[in-house]
Structure formats: structure tokens, C-alpha cells
Image (cartoon, rainbow, N blue to C red):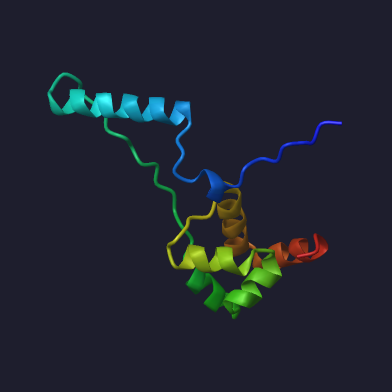
Length: 117
């Protein structure tokens, strides 16, 4: 029986570009050179703003520490810290949940408790 091959870990493949990555890098470089020489006009990229919830203010309003907020609503403490310190942004589903917590904290806590948070 043939032995199954394991998938390489990210640290084992760090710095190794796939053929696709190399092709994308070459395309980006070619576009940048064409833009810099005036041969290609690049379109500006529009950022899509969305309102971020002031998590420290929300926690203060609810009288919760980071750990208490994470426990009550089912977030990981690390994620909450990353959001508050600006290292990461919550994904769309987390932003929706945070907005719901902001508007209906008691209902959100009850639902989270029912779900085992």
C-alpha cells in the first residue's frame, strides 16, 4: 500500500514561489514599468469604508473587560485584542455581530449563551 504524502507546512515552503505567483509578480512588474513610462494608465483603487465599532467604549458601556467580553459573546481574546489594537480588522460576520451587540447586548448575550459561548 502506498504511503500518503503529507502537505508541506507553511514554514517549509516559505520563500518558494509557485509558477502562478511568479507569473503574477512578472505581470505586476510589467504593468508598473508600463505605468511609469507613461504607456499605461492605472485605475485608482477605491477603498470601501465601513464604520468600525469602538470596542473599548462598547466594553466600558457594558462594564466588561476584554476577557469578559470575549467570554460573554464567544470571541477569542486574541482576536478581540488584535481588533482593539488595530493589528487586524474583524471580518464581515464579526462586524455584523459586533453591531448587533452594540444595539442589543442583552439579546446577543442570551443567544451566545444558548450557543455555548
